[in-house]
Amino acid sequence: MHGIDDLAGLVIGVQKGNTSQPVADKLLAEGRAARVRVYAYDEIETALGDLSSGGCDAFMKLAPVTHWFVQDRPRLKVVQTGITREVLGVCVRKGDTVLRQAIDAAQATLARDGTLAALIKQWLGEGATAPT
Image (cartoon, rainbow, N blue to C red; front, top):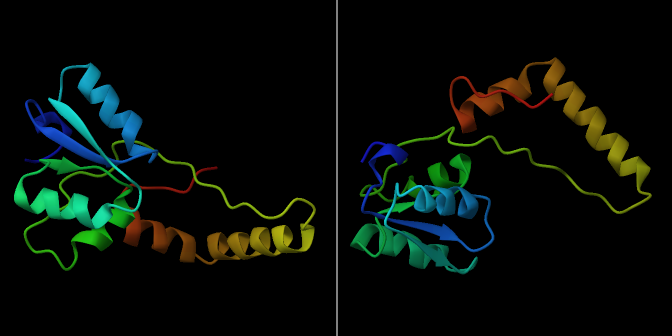
């Protein structure tokens, strides 16, 4: 398998409520996969075990996380990234302007000195960019 175009007749595993679930559900609705197998959030080890043993044929999750999960599992491989673009946020307690400003300042510094771009490339691959 090389990516989502190879899922016909196969089972996609996802974590319940994860941002990958609607992507997998859409592939199923389009007839591009046979079934979506949903794992509870705390069942990631079960899902990866099933992926190794055939309980599911593919597993979808954010790219940095999947890269980390497969690093010690030589039978598993990340075959495609960039399927969707996720915009993540950092939340702070309402009214905690000191912490919010510190996060904003740190992010601006990381963007300015090139660290943010390097981290994005390292974890998300060539061509990935920070949202504007």
